[in-house]
Image (cartoon, rainbow, N blue to C red):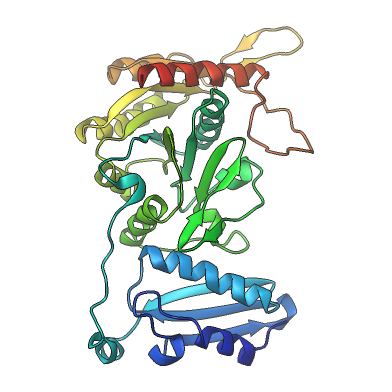
Length: 353
């Protein structure tokens, strides 16, 4: 287990990513706590500027260094350096600002597709991961951002155990089933809750676009949080040309609530590619009889209201789990529902040309 003194020695040598001064020089180490019984270390670091792409990379470097020294888990909080401390270093040069790049550059050929819903519990994340995999199975180059930063679930749903690595000053996404994935879940320890204010969420989302080495992508899917809150608003402002798919269940109330997400897309000039009706029915393996557990017609009604098409109906059924390639929410290509996802992916690809 790393000691407090060892941790401070390691942190002292690290440089503030914007000032290029060591944390020892900036007095940036605010707190170091050790829980020996759990081999856990908690640190609080002050930087010249928080909420930047460089902060995310710096966080990964701290975790890597402290784990190499013997910590089993690492918790990190960031704060802003005091104005008094910043004044000491400003003479050497101003603090650089953020500049968008990569996928957000004007010459990017990637198509952004946001998967949205009006409320939670309709299977939006399940649709996101399976549509991404289905598009990859069609030979498309696909990325997936788990933009539900409070309720991230994509890594678990896809059975991802690896974490992103650094290549120079860029973050490499984790690839599974041919899909490149980035999620807030990769940057928290032990499934810890994320307690951030709205503006910080938008900055993190921007980091996912500009600081991740996505490579050449045909499509980048975003699994949005349910509803029309801060993160959904940030997506609409950051990606003015984003396409959207709205997920609902057949229940009339679910479709009514989902219409809000669709209306928000239309008001911000986002093109709605279509509606996916999830949990459309349950089909008995014994009798083949279909039971409409959540009612009927919600998807059709929503598509009609939003003046778009119903891309597909997905029944209730678990994927077949495979211990060798465990992914609790991914349907195999030859699974009945896997084939429906392929049909939906083909429709999406056709619509987008």
